[in-house]
Length: 369
Ligand SMILES: *Cc1c(COP(=O)(O)O)cnc(C)c1O
Image (tube, rainbow, N blue to C red):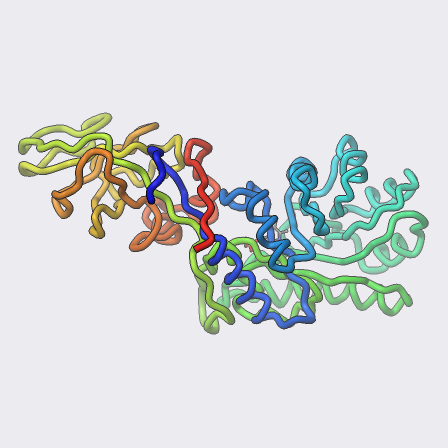
């Protein structure tokens, strides 16, 4: 039965579990999955998604910041939680108190945490080519820092691929070589590098296993999308299906005469008499404004082109192909016939930003089916 809502997203926990299982199967049981549930689980709802994945066997989850980790702890999530964006000084205490596992991004920070005598497990990130976070220290310096620790325990070394889906680029091999140098130096010094992790969805999907790993961090793939490849990429190692479908109801259906303007700046003017509908969702709900005059929803199983500008709360569509629809009927914004990858393609965005952009007004409804 459809909910009594203007716009809602249906999230299939069955598909979520099945995506998790597909990825686990592809990497094998010796590799730990740390599903990435940052940004409210890419718009899917971090608490619900984390609960479901924890019950499905996830022993690790990954978030961006302490605040996200605390929300999960306060909701009863017991899995290990990796805080990938690191911690600022004021986040140390809550990270410690809630048993979060921070990623440390410099040797100075590592030494400072150690001086604070926190008995804390952390992961150390090595910058191998993103130039955002992670230490840029030479292998010998890393070894020296690790060797001097007394209270902090470096439980893992990690990095992050910039171009794992791009087989026309040599960057993945360059990054892997830099990471390997650090791991090798650590081992040669008689220290254990602990868990090694490098791969997000694209690295896993396209078999970038030369980045020897004991843990992988899939985000997008958990939600049902594999980043589009470039160059001579192999076929993905697993299949996943979109977890989220998004619907909104028609508020109004009307016939307009040829020449009638539609929406702000009259960016559409009817070339003929036509039947149009006004849908109860706009860019405030996360419909990319750049779908104006270009995108489509799915109405009654058919493509219903967006007419004119997407407004804040409303979007007007062409109902020529679905004349049976009435006010109150639902149309599909994202679902069968139009996925986040397609929306992103039309809007000049990426599927990540489409999913993360789905707004608060869009109620998330969880289904076991
Ligand atoms: C977001 C993120 C991931 C997940 O990336 P996907 O492409 O969504 O799989 C993995 N690792 C780090 C460091 C991230 O920030």
